[in-house]
Image (cartoon, rainbow, N blue to C red; front, side, top):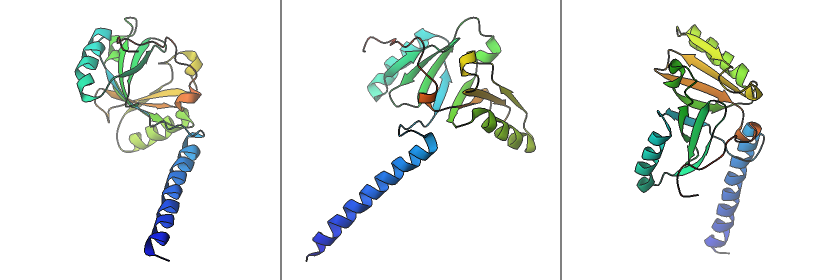
Length: 177
């Protein structure tokens, strides 16, 4: 028996084991085998600014995946799956419109926000936990943590995207659909 007859089956078993381990890990983390790493949200002033940024990003390989409107926000998700441009309806107070954010996927957003809040306060930072930013149907699914540990940004704890329900107002703002 040659060395190749031993090596290739071992490599195949190793690859299958690594891929299976990755998906089992994702299944335990998210309860479903669809990966959701969370998002990095960047506030833009309006839809026009989003279109301009999309035009500039297009040659670099980033394009609009889809746009949706949950409540008083409008969100354009790019094709990398993690970058989101957010703009607010005019009825949202200006002090809430100037916040970028990181979205973190968790099974229990309220408990995770409370845990982070306690840890940050123990280290000398101020925190405010808000569950009133999004529509009432998401009240147990999305929690926002405002803290002075971040400048002009928030941390959003949320359930997996498939647990959030449909994407209200789903549309495409660029011409390529």
